[in-house]
Length: 146
Image: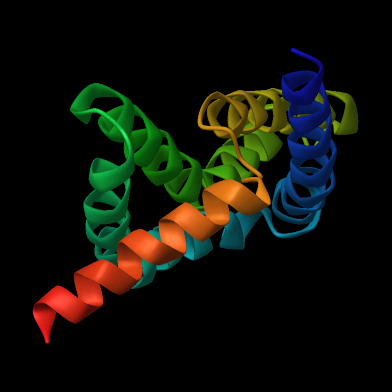
């Protein structure tokens, strides 16, 4: 439980800084660019995100039961896609609420909480043992493919 609290705090604080910067940037100063940036980011990053998803699915399915592996890779997938939705939502909220920093700050806080919860549920950041297991699973996949 203590490890989960530390992981949640770490995930929350790191995401809070990044999300608040994006929210203020696109909700206050780049209102007209937020939607375009978010959509272009999602279009450009989707092939890469899905490639990572496939590789992670293979690795995690070797480490965990099917249900747990699905939960882990789906949470990581949603977490990666949220990066594109933050500028879109910040831009919309900036237009609707005349770039009110309190509203934008609360939006950033909400996104940071959701992302921290998603990442903590999968155990991110991974411990050294988990990283070694993942590396071994990926290496065995690479050696089987060769």
